[in-house]
Length: 245
Image (tube, rainbow, N blue to C red; front, side, top):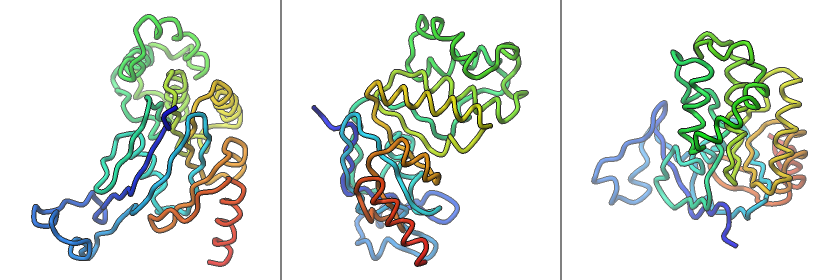
């Protein structure tokens, strides 16, 4: 059985405040010549494999490359070095409200977003009521998306994306938003997806959530993979480093 995610010698390069751009000459220069003031490697020499059905938690302080790694796996960011191979489609619970169109109604956005992610029209129609009910937006189906509150937008996006049948689920801090009732619904939905054999790649600062959903952890620090081990061991190391620092 092929691995769900294979990452080999991964590197991505930025300039402060924007993606780094290199000249043609830079492409043939050594790494020392490529680095200039204000430029840095957000990730460098990162390698790991995720098997199908695994639940992986990505741990690290802010700015250490966690969300960058998730975007590389999602395919919305391209690597400057190395490779990312994803065997199967992904359901990206990242930047949840991105891709929705402000002037379209809730109903139109559900059809558009689910369709863009590859859900057939008949399946969208079959699941539509369930998605609206999960988002608690029954009374707002004809409301333009731009008139929804931020909480409503997040509920709608989670509802739609979590209904995708992709084998790999990417989650970036989504459980940190919304009220307790909505978070509980999110927890239950993720539990259902994991019970169905989905692969979870999860970025969070919430230690309780990481211990609940994940069995293995990746600890990133300064763009490097410091530790790849069972989640409890990774969190213990991270907490020890944070205390020492």
